[in-house]
Amino acid sequence: MAWWRKQTNDGSFPKTDAGSGSLDDYQYGLQPKNARVLIRLAGSDPYQAELASLLGDEELATAGGQRTAEEERTDAPMQVRLFTGTKVTGVVGTVPRGLESAVSESFSRLEQRGEKLRIPARVVQTKNGLRVELLVGRTR
Image (cartoon, rainbow, N blue to C red; front, side, top):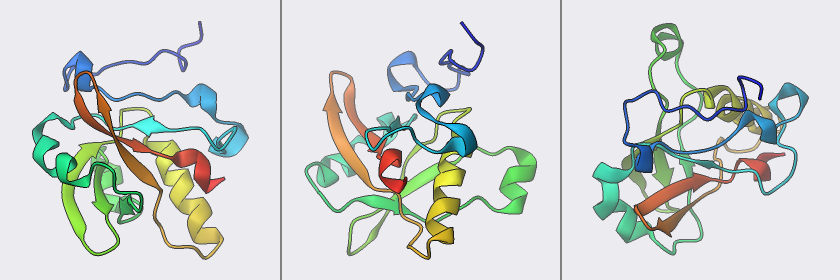
């Protein structure tokens, strides 16, 4: 198995809240292979109350855009806020380590097309609580 296929947890989140996604779901240039590609955010356990209020909302998207030069320089985690159509939530999770570049490329594609820098998202119920999935494949 190649090193990039392995989903690793850097130890900062419990295994049940480590997020998920794989670089195998992307083609050259970090283009998603299909419209079903998604990334499940890590670190959502502290935000369960906020996520419960968003459960079932069909118009969720990421709020904000690419990381600043300072965040890139310090290798800060990529935190995600959601836009609900009328307001912006607080932080609801972070992009799992190793997948930040896939999210950044999605923002770049949207910017090049002149679209808003918003990746569609949804809140899903799992056996370990509510989680946020970024629907990165829809940015193809």
